[in-house]
Length: 437
Image (cartoon, rainbow, N blue to C red; front, side, top):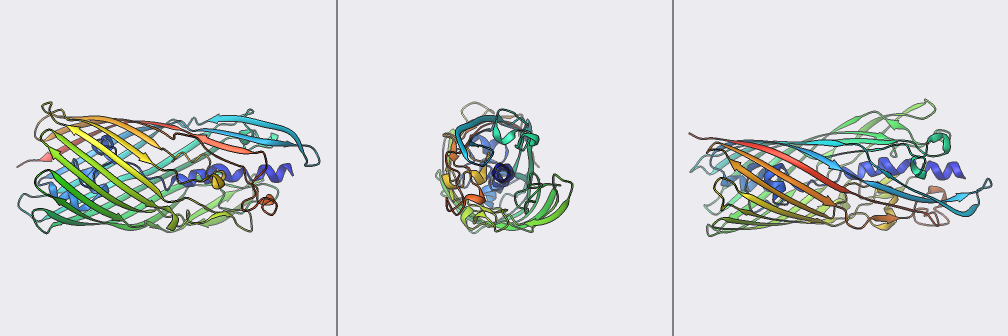
């Protein structure tokens, strides 16, 4: 009973890591991040415009190149409590609880963008290479948390994962009139994923769930947008980023007893619908965006629960809403300053909390402050500081496929609980160069 119960924990962390692949980065580049990610109708820089509305690059009349690099820090904490069982598999009435903190450290976040515009031309072109999703967890072995107990004591020891998603886009915008533009952006994606353990593989009765080498997958999609500028300060925009459809991750697995195996798993990047409003008056620029992220129709997220072989069928994420707002003040010569705020709803309900531990993608409130320094008409330096928090902890019962018949639908274990929360911090710097004639 104890072995069956603890083996189900192998699903936790790798599943949580996979859940983060659907995490939508709130912004791209220092300028866009400092506006809370709002850019669908207020293209202050080329990176934000290329990421959120391809039609809006029509506002740029020069050739511009921009590079940003961020250093991202996250501090997830995982709490678990489990009932203790006697030698016959019966609960003793006692509970074992503990907390583990992640010690992964810093993750880089690069962004490269370029736009080719020309004054008087109806055609504008762009290219971008953005890290739009990336994560990793490193939960060390612990004797004070049941999940991270050494394997010799019935736990799983250290838990690690690593994921990177790079998106490359080629953008074209056309000015139908002086006020209205349309745009299109085909996108190509490259993702890598490494899991320890791997919940998408069938477990072994004697060796649990395996770890896996890093696997890669390619994906394709597109983005479409419209942009309106009244010429009197008011702006509006909308965009639709299609599902980024990936091929399968092909995992080479190694079990604890040294045996090996393979399995495939498909996980796409969700479609995103964006609406934006902008207003510019004198030295002030305002931006407000709303996004809906469609997890419920995305492979890898639309299903949930256990398969007949006790692997994970899917992660059960709900659609989320994201609100981004920002203000820029340009009253200081060559030194615009910006404040931004981002709100995101939680895609994980209580019933599937277990399948998404530690779910470090759950950030409810994020705050940003940033500035630029315009060295001259060609060079501009940008910087931003971000802080995010998950708000209330996400919590729910532990699940075991052996308990499904007694406690449907997912086999909740009476008296158990898992919960997690986190904070994030990031500093990012960028440089932009405008090729003036």
